[in-house]
Length: 494
Ligand SMILES: [Zn+2]
Ligand SMILES: [Zn+2]
Image (cartoon, helix red, strand yellow):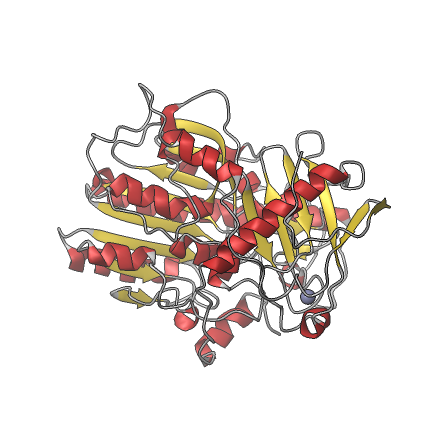
């Protein structure tokens, strides 16, 4: 049984060739949606679960961490991390750190590319709430948002952000209010000397350190010995630097496999860089008194669904994320509950005992650390879009099901002609049973129309609740020559 919001007029629904389409009242898809929708049932379940207690798990009376260290591994697919079950030994050292803390095995990113995914991590709200969703159509985060760094500043922490620049530059306002921001290059190693200087300068005072690197982002050119670690007996000469460039066709499967071996080599390289950093923190006694969160923002595609790179879809290759958390009072536990990286901010504040602002749409997941066997499910949402079709995609995922639609994320895409005319007449839907069809190949939306519509109404409710927060982004400042250079290095511009 499901109830569609009154403002949806379902005129027509058909399933054909794996495509299901529902027509909606024109004009309601782009622009303002009805406000006042209640919180989703899944969210209520999660809030209820978070009040449950257990004998084991996180100890709220245990020692609190002194520092917070947040490390974002850009473009690292969760399913290419050893701890997440990858058959290649890409991340033996991070896996060992994950064994010491909480590993969230079923974690979904709010988007399929860098800016919206990180902005949701820093603000605790969905892309339709912060308004940065569509590639080349994103603004600065609204200064009215409570951000991670503002909250830690207020509690007397030194705050420093060291990023790979480009989409992680200061252009989008994500790093406003950090005491220190620096970006000396795209890779972690480019910034680490400055990071150590900053840590030394902070001394014994509490710190919030944000570290980010595009190490695993294409072009996939790992240094030796990582470039041969997974390449087997490949004897070809595929030019990896040209993979997925505009106008370059799809390589042969054997060459795609080789490209993936280079991507995995990049992940193995970042495993050593980050593990060396964590080992040194431990040697200095800093790790032991820090909460460390290691996450990935989104993945990359290697033609699993006909395309490469990211941004353009919401398949699991792109939206499954890693979330590893260790620190004092964090038990060693594998969490099977379905969570999102949007939950990281409320969870971290919970660990430090800081109040969470009411605006947050994620929830604290500390209650998930009790080692319960039965996975708790929840509805986790994702949004993306780009300057060419698909202009906008929205999805809801549970541990078993995912509905992907081409519904706009609550605001029009400036590049979409139909958004501009206000003439979207319907929504396409793709429903997948992830348990039986983890490769997301068989669209069941036509077969389970009622269920697909129920999930669609959940996405619409989530968008409506996000818009109710009323905190749109503001226009970004002009790109600096340095930003442009980084974006070129990452293959975003020619
Ligand atoms: Zn990214
Ligand atoms: Zn549109």
